[in-house]
Length: 357
Image (tube, rainbow, N blue to C red):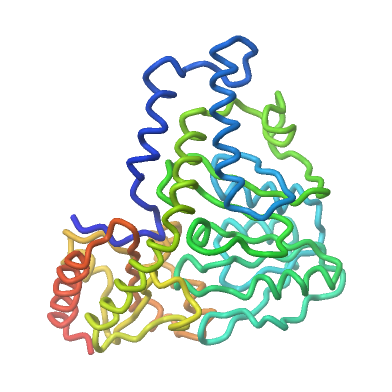
């Protein structure tokens, strides 16, 4: 199986797995919130992991561990208490659905045909929180989040950034008040994420109980998940330049391997480990059935089973028919050049067998 779905999840780094093992199988089973020696050892592992994850973010804030980015985004949006919200049209459902729950009249900031939010987008008066992602999970476009953060602050609003696809790959979004990340998108374990909160910002907890996580999230932390997250974060920072160079090489190769396909999203202002493209007349369900030795996506993994056209592609101005002819290939640290060669041969052959133009 050739894995090309890095936007859905990334392979667990061996270093992250090793960091987790002690806290799974050896003497690290203790509750990190217990005062005895084993508990204090587990708590120390959590503290180390928190520092490693904090290095992903700007100085002057704190890291709150969560079950993942979805919980982190819910905590930021609902916990902020903002009554009026503005979000981009291409946000992940974890932002869009939560924002609409908090504010049914939530303002939607449009994007260009290239999949970019206008840095000068008008923020409605009275908006309390603006949310724009750093890197889009479906088409890979990198948004002008620093400029949008400035605009949000000028309008008197907080700025929240979903940095799930950019964390460990790009510099942290400057100017954000809150940033959400997920471990399994940077070669860490599933089931843990984090919300970074700038100093001076207060949130109301969503989960009540013992208040273990800085009074904002009740429940026992997993030292194993924290340790794996921390190790993956540290590794992503140390390998960031090498990973980026590797992905840039793969991108150039992939673009040459798919002649006749149309790229979705800006070719330059993007994370180049995301190749979203379409081909007229393509039956994507049939294509995926014919390419069973490949793991890739017909869109966002979170919504690919819905049968609905991608809201991201529709926001670019594509018709439902065009949106349904798109596939997404995601590649990164552990992808080999020969993986792309074999995958492109299979995908192109299957598409041509359909008679897709």
